[in-house]
Amino acid sequence: MKAGRRIGIMGGTFDPIHNGHLVAASEVADRFALDEVVFVPTGVPWQKSDVTVSPAEDRYLMTVIATASNPRFQVSRVDVDREGPTYTVDTLRDLRRAYGADAELFFITGADALEKILSWKDAAQMFTLARFVGVTRPGFELTDDHLPADTVSLVEVPAMAISSTACRDRVAAGKPVWYLVPDGVVQYIAKRGLYTPRD
Ligand SMILES: Nc1ncnc2c1ncn2[C@@H]1O[C@H](COP(=O)(O)OP(=O)(O)OP(=O)(O)O)[C@@H](O)[C@H]1O
Ligand SMILES: O=C(O)c1ccc[n+]([C@@H]2O[C@H](COP(=O)([O-])O)[C@@H](O)[C@H]2O)c1
Image 1 (cartoon, rainbow, N blue to C red):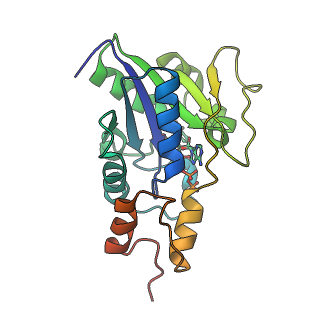
Image 2: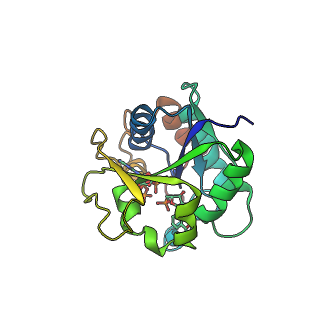
């Protein structure tokens, strides 16, 4: 693996990955002159234990399909392959090992995730392992008032009023998700029958 590079990390459940995730990653990559952005699908997203989450392999494959056309976008299996609940503190340790001590890591979160970040496991330690970048998301206020000074950088990204929940609901209702998610992801959802209620 390469060392000394500027690496963005876009963690998410990606059930499914949508254009809001991709635009956020692209914008932060441009803003911070990142060499690459690694998308990291969660294994077991413990703060989503109240919702049914698709199998990790489906979410991983959709992420691969969605990012395949961008040479600077990569996908990591570190969270999918780790046993137990997914904690970002573990993600960052694993990626630090993979990219080397010289790499600069930038963990990207939307405004909604940033709101709850102090509830994440070992949050104080986590902040020492990477720089954090909070991005705007329609419907949420982007603020770092609840965080220690200089913990995160806040970045405005093009507003994409898309959520995975809305994509799942649209598929379940027989509505299209073309142009909300990449074309290959539309086709993967249909091929695997994801989000379609079964009798
Ligand atoms: N439209 C968006 N604009 C900016 N950031 C986003 C957007 N959608 C998701 N994100 C961010 O991407 C990361 C991963 O999000 P996640 O995979 O949970 O998608 P989601 O759309 O929030 O899913 P769900 O609706 O299932 O909760 C989080 O940091 C989240 O804040
Ligand atoms: O570390 C934690 O405790 C933690 C708690 C909730 C979410 N996260 C991370 O935040 C990212 C977005 O998660 P989610 O659940 O909004 O899809 C993803 O990388 C998760 O692993 C991390």
